[in-house]
Amino acid sequence: MKLLTALAVAALSLPFGANAFAQTTSSGLTRADVMAQLQQAQAEGLVPTPTGDYPPSAATIARNREIYAIQHGTDHAGALSTADAPTMQSRTASN
Image (cartoon, rainbow, N blue to C red; front, side):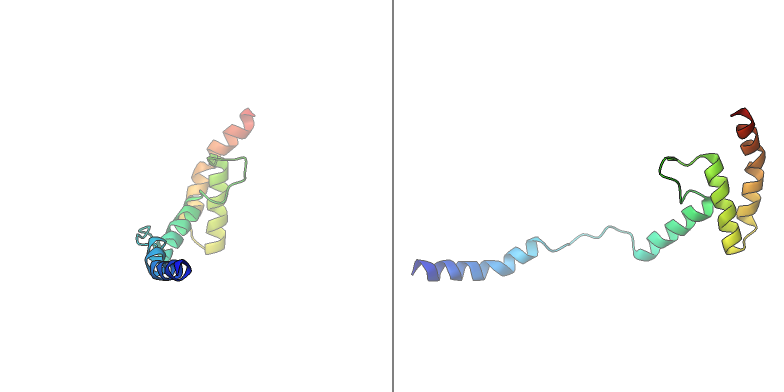
């Protein structure tokens, strides 16, 4: 009799226990939002970065902007990277 009671209690508690593990809140960002943020970070030259270069240096950002401009055929990112070029040259001269 105790076994039958235990099985009945277990069977009745399963539907209630499943609701405890259900995800009820959303993170607020959709997949499209995350993809747009990633594309914006790539256009700004913030990603990708080498493992040892965090936060990314100005040289890495300029290089990433130039690569992005070449890959996507935009002049905006190229203009930004050429504006940073004298700064990069003065840094390499001082090293």
